[in-house]
Length: 343
Image (cartoon, rainbow, N blue to C red; front, side, top):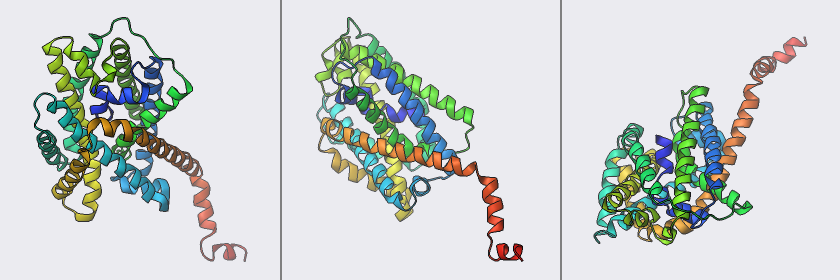
């Protein structure tokens, strides 16, 4: 639920980021390719967590990149800041269309997020366990009721590249948490990765079919536009869906930023509050502006982070395969040992 909740944020739940990456009528093959990429990246990041055995992302990055860990820290911090800002802007965009009181909406939910984040990862997991199943059900209900004679774009090399950067963007935010999870067995890692990929792939396919059946892709939040044509119940559900999607991603981004600030001031509540205030100021540029202009750039950063993580796994696997040799070699080359052996 943690991974799914991170991916299905305001951008995904509203359909805005899907349109930003794949156009107003995405090809159905996008869903299958993205599902495969989610599986592979979940597998890699959870495996990094098992190998690194660290409780914070700073330590993980140190093990992955050594003295260049500052570069990875900047990647993740920038990603978390942009994501949190987009979620705050998303609340104002969503509820501001119903009743214009922004930025009251982003402030109110930001305060709630701050209180949840002070509880750490346990608070995040509890919220996701409640919100994510409802989120999945609502997206399915709204999109499937809007499917009728869809038309699609072609799947090209450019679409494949955007699929990779799209999933990389979403998974980089999840990586900040997944790489600190350890204690899972190989079977649990594979099962978690597979379940996540199936859910994300299915939801993407539903969105693809619904977007191809309407002109909702031109709107700020396509799912809201779709729901307005199917009655007040679906409209209410879609608003709830986007709000829940915003909140689940907001929590993941917020906890990542707060943990980093907390390493300097050692006060969890203050760290969460400072992170919220900074991103609230950034959110004033608007939801659509953040998603359309900054998300594709985050996708490139996410792809780089994935590549570095993959290299770390290969390197650490090759080293662990030579443990016996390294142990014996270490004994031989202790100070003065070789000279003593040679007489």
